[in-house]
Image (cartoon, rainbow, N blue to C red; front, top):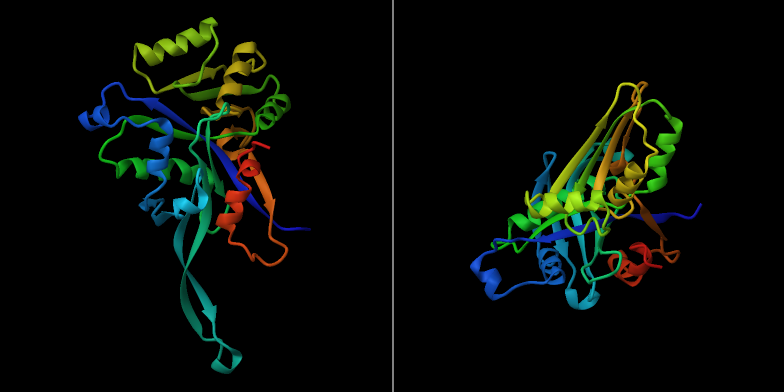
Length: 282
């Protein structure tokens, strides 16, 4: 079987802050400029007790994309030769995953892809922590930013079909900005949370010990926004042992084959060349 690289997909959501700093008013940034600024600098952060470092590639080599790597240091025990008695030696090395960002405007939004690398960590937990650390080192923040996995929507509906009449809990956590574009009552209500209560996120919980009806138009519409459009997340529970669902565990991913010639081209450059495929735009 041919080996391949896997990249998990995310959508970046940005909301313009109403009260911005004086410098932001003098030098306002577009969404593209802000995303480019965030991902164009070295960033260090701690996550689950592990130190991570993100570094960008020279932007001149990848423009209009921003490409970088996120990695962590790993200590491994190795052994010397039999002649040396297989003596144990601690070897320190770094493991890194490739990050691809398209900050330009598209109909399907601004996307981020992170290579899945078991020695580095789960992209679904690294992406929001990385974004938080990037914003934390900025003196001015013209936008409220968030990142969510673009999820395989069929996974949720498979869960619903398997547990018809047994689902007792569904929770939607939704990013309000840029989320709802229709004119029905539900969209209007979400927009009011954004405009009147100044909400960035809205959580909706549906609970019933007798079984939640997950096939309604409202649930389908909200699930579509949360998963396919990458503007939120879903958690659900059904009767049974460990019968849970989390959209964060069901990422939409792209795969590119490993260079058959032995990686003659660095993955960061290959990823930049294949960005349209990786970001699901082919």
